[in-house]
Length: 266
Image 1 (tube, helix red, strand yellow):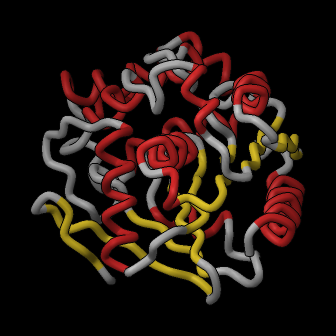
Image 2 (cartoon, one colour; image 1 turned 180 degrees about the horizontal axis):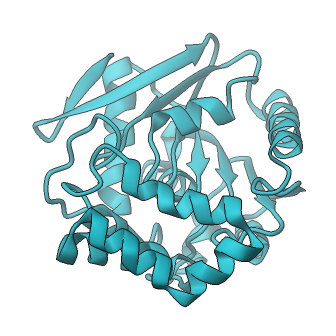
């Protein structure tokens, strides 16, 4: 598996396809396989995804973790691969990383693909509170005890009954490779933010696609609305729910991204 060094840490990544570079990042608690899978049917581009620190095979240590560091890591990957500019983005946390990179190095970002964003300019968004609590529970009591605490949590119990696939997605953080060693990545990332104010988004001038879906309490459609309004000229597409119509979701997501890339930059 290819890797590169960033701040004396081995960061693992993978690529798929050929063509102009699309550097696309996974969500919090996931890994590069999520990002590659989401873009696996795109044509005419080279998709590049890395395991962010504290995720997958990238040993994260104790942190601290934040959007700025993760954005610098993505830019470091581009340096390693000799990529001057690329389409950036990702899913949930990954979309925030893409935005953070675009604000830090705008000339290196040709376009943004922001899928199911979960953060705006305020740390500790309420939609991600349950994820932060899990991180603290694992740190304080270990994986097994934290799993019991989650199952007893009223919000999770209701979600388990009303949206079981979403509940399963949350519980998936217990089976990730670094569930115990990098538990703090969960609450430290939730407590951070990809940009300091909504006004910062006025500095994003590249073509931008925001994709949201209904019936997703972790990634409310309203966040996508706010994001798209704050980025001049951004497109906002609402696709079928990932948790209740996975195949339709993926098909519509691929179609929206392909149309955007074909018309904008690839």
